[in-house]
Amino acid sequence: MEKLIKRYRVRIKNTLVSNKRYLYQNIDWNDRLICIKGSRGVGKTTLILQYIKQNFINDETTLYISLDDIHFQVNTLIDTVEEFYLNGGKRIFIDEVHKYSNWSIEIKNIYDTYTDLKIVFTSSSLLEIHKGEADLSRRAVNYTLEGLSFREFIQLETHQNYNTLTLDQILCNHLEIAQEITSNVKIYPLFKKYLTTGFYPFYLEGEASYMLKLKSVIDLTLESDIPSVYHTEFKTIYKLKKLLYIIATSLPYQTNITELSRSIETSSRNSTLLYLDYLDKGKLTANLKTSAKGKNIMVKPDKIYLENPNLMYAIGNTNLIDGNVRETFFFNQVRSKHIVNTSKQSDFLVDELYTFEIGGKGKKQKQILNIENSYIAADNIEIGFQNKIPLWLFGFLY
Image (cartoon, one colour):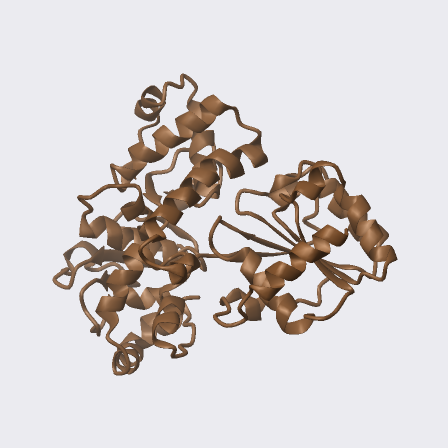
């Protein structure tokens, strides 16, 4: 326990409380059991360390532990928590629970036994807490931390604060909102920078090393996170890497399961669909389906995108088409708050109500003419007109 506390103190000392993510203010930290999910690299650990440092910096009744610590090679989580609790512990923050095989049962037992202990735990976006050996879904309050929104990126770059916007605000008042924002900041240099190197908070550590770190995120998601959650074999990791490369070099990928199965040397259609689901839950890809298909993983997506534009540049496709980058940005930012599906007439259908066509500043109305509640999300414009809305403005949804 003493070594765990020493390592925790070092991490707290090196944590900056500035630049808090959007989710920090949205969490009700008073709940007894909180789960914070998110993909690798989006800042889950920093988020909880910031909260501890700001509120419990010298409080010995608070402890942070990471379950990938060597301590847990020979010690159990439940025994560690019991020792902490018996010595006066009141709050425990548990990082990387997906790295610990018995996590759900032990957290359930801790929650049920120590009824005055508050627990916050983080996990990979891959983890589904209702599918653990002990179902925590009725006990835990769940939050998901996304990568940096374009709004957050602008705040980090300009040190100015901007409010989040609802989709209705963007659709109804985009002209006034865009005029106000662009009167204070030059949007397009920032937007281009965000698309290439602005989605993951570690860009603040230096742009020169950003792509190397992002490639490491991809590798660790495939080689560590997915196997730790789904207990996959080495040959499956190889197939996932090949699958990701095929998708990345054919964006957006028009799904052909038979062709994909052949390419990754898998005879089972269901296995290929399962691998696509792994990549989607690992936040490496984003599967786009019609609303009628629902969330059934055994139904093929109509199109597959990479999860965010930065991944498009990291995986090495040097001949990126602007249209693919635009669609990936829109899909990534909007699906964080809304249901996005395939549209029969255009690019995207949002909340089964709004139709969106994505394009450049010269994009015409032809494709969405006479479609109710239809809009153009246009790149390379600062301010829109009528139903033509600047693409960058959809980066203000969170």
